[in-house]
Length: 288
Image (cartoon, rainbow, N blue to C red; front, top):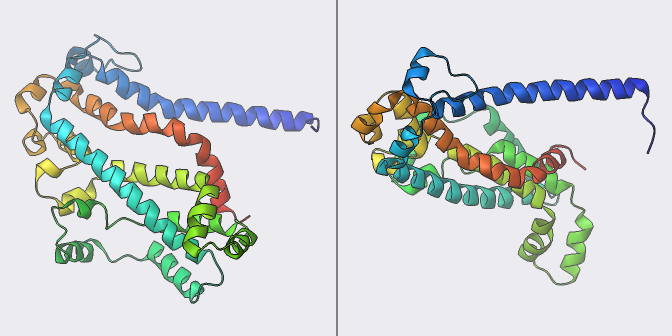
């Protein structure tokens, strides 16, 4: 290993310090919202809560977690996120892999059409009319199909596939594998980093999604937890469908508690995918 010069060591040290400061600044709002979720109304109304809970209180957690509508919304979000992530991964993979191969007829035209969608979209009203015409309103599919493929994710995955040597495919074809066999048995096992990265991207996007529910769903029993949270923040508990009387008693930190409970699953899942995240994103962004 080459010995670092004094300038390189100084540069590295400054980078580490700056990144640690940035990480601390990013962490402060998280600690603040967690502290508020465990504080009592008196200190919250006085505005004295910073990074440590004051007047430790878990009543709000008990009230929210006893609310049937909250868990119904939570279950809806889990269903939407899991199904949408699976559908998005399958469709993105089946689109990105052919685009990564130069032998695909009309490849450049298809790539051009894909890139155009990054800058121009049909708009909210045409999308709504299309979903309604397909009779997907107030159904599970209204939360899954309209945003099934992200153009950015598609292009990143395409670039990753381009870095896989075509010699492997040719050898597998000579051994008798069909194109589907090559994809399933050769390409996908080599693509775990990018698949994990795309799964994380799609899962976070779907977990945090709320606008589609506002457009396409009318029944609060189908709402995801983000709509429950939005209605609490807006002060519209009747619309959220929750127990208004019970939640009013703990209204001071109800928003903080709901934010913590809503973000918790993604925070728990991220560490398991983080080791694939940097590798998949970097390899998929730069052609090897």
